[in-house]
Every structure is written in structure tokens, then in C-alpha cells.
Image 1 (cartoon, helix red, strand yellow):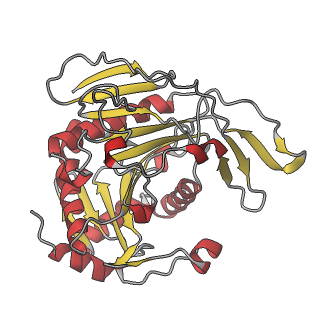
Image 2 (cartoon, rainbow, N blue to C red):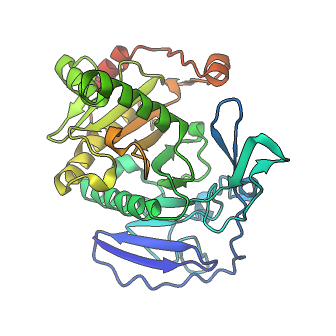
Length: 362
């Protein structure tokens, strides 16, 4: 794999990750773009202690353009895009409308002088990851070799974003489908460098610490061993990874892909683990698309260790979930879920696992 870094017309960084023989990545962004001036901020909810991001400049971001105006396709004659090159394998670039960014202005330490409502600049970084130059493809249609290149890009960006000022946690994820809220249909994901440890990660770390103090082992390690032994919710496994529907799944369709070895983040994976991941994950995505006989809208979320805390209690894993509870019905996060954060699932994990195992994958 070859890594090449460059800059776009407004100074944002763009990095090419090539797994095929290509010409040098020297194309210049010909667009006349205004200089970046993000004004992201974060405010702490005094009732929960959780940080909330504020990024009003994102209201003007591109929204559902037609395919011939997709900003994530390669540049063609007379139509410059976010990627200046005429082709690419995998490419990562700074988001033009970031939720968090470097160089945000300093702010007073509290909102309107209220000592209980802290605030700060939304210092961090947000990046876009394009998995392929083929607008009509998907992650599930990538080759195992291309998935390995994506894994290398995730590992590279996790390391580099972790070293940036203010970044406390790196989150790699993919949103797929309009039902999820996707506004650009080109196969792509995102990477957030948060200026705080996210609430879900804090909760999982607290649980892992308590479990380790009582049992001397990691809770996810014990869950993994139990799921592999029971096989009731198992979807598939390889030498280094196992995929299963969690026993307490919140979402109508949810699969966890877990490495057999405890590692804190993607950069800590060995070459063998990185190679092996794609084979299982592509099988999982094929089963998800076959569940209702059409492309499944989903979120794929990598749970990685924070940059500075809790790394010894972290166990990397990928959570893939969907809001589609039947072929034509969505799971809405209504009163209980949105108001009280209490999930009520419409199907049992055992039912979903059985149906996913029955799907024939090409």
C-alpha cells in the first residue's frame, strides 16, 4: 500500500491510500474555495455531565446532490470535486463542514456566566473516508484486499488524530442509507477526533473496570467465550474474529464483530488480524443485505480505546446495527428510547441470528 498526502484548495489535508499501481498523486485542486473558518464549540449538560457539540456552520453542507454532481467522485474534465485525482483506491480528507476542528476560536469557560454550564472550542478533527471511486458500489462489494487497505487507512488516521492537540478519542464509522440520515450516497465513512471521551465509551469502561475488579477478566472476553460456546447467536467466525448478535441487543438488527485477542484500537491489530477481518466482515454485510432482500441501511461503529485513559480496560470491536425492523418498517427512537435511554427491541436477538445464518451469501 502507498500513502500520499496533499492539500486541497482551502488548505485541508487529503491522503491517498493506494493498493494498486497508480501514477503519482500530484493533481491540484483547481477550485476557488474560501478559507476554512470552523467555529465549533462544545457545551457540558449540567444535568447529565455529558458534552454536546455545537456546529451551526454545518447547516450549509451539501445535501443529497444528484449522482453527476457527487463531491466524492473523482474529478473529471470540467467538474472538480473534493478529490482532485481522476481515480483513486481509498482516500481520506478533512471534512469541509466539520463538527470538530483544529484552530477553532477560544471561548469563555462558561455559557453566559453560568458556572454549571461549561463550554470550550470544539477542538478536534473530522475526516471523510471514501472506500472506492465507484459511486454505485458499497463496502459490502469491496474485495478483501480493498478492505485491508481501508483498515490500513483507519489505523493510520487513528494514530495521527490521536496525536493532535485536544483529541481524546478517535471514532471510525460508516453511515449507510437514507433511513440512517445519509446525504451523500457515494460509499464512504467518517472519522471523528473528539475533544472528550464519549458517553458510551465512559459507560463501557466503567462496566469493564467493575467486572475486572470482581472477576479478574475482561467482560467482553467472557461474553465472546460464552457466545462462541453457546452458538445460538453466532453469525460466523474466522481464526482471529467472531461475529454474533449480542444477547441484549438494542437495535432490531445488530451484530458485533470482535477480535479474539484484547487490543485497545485498530493500530494494535497484527497483520494477520487485519487480513482476516475483511473475510468475516464481508460475509456479515452480505447476510445483512440478504436479510430483507435489499441493501440494509446501517451504522458501522468502531469502539476504540480513548487516547489517554482506560486503555487497559478497552477491547476493540465493531458494532453494526440497523433501524430497519422489517423490510418496510423503521424502528423509531420514540419516548422510552429518546426520553429515558431505555431501549425496547421489537425482535429477539436469537430470532435475528437465526435469520442471518439462513441467508445465502454469494
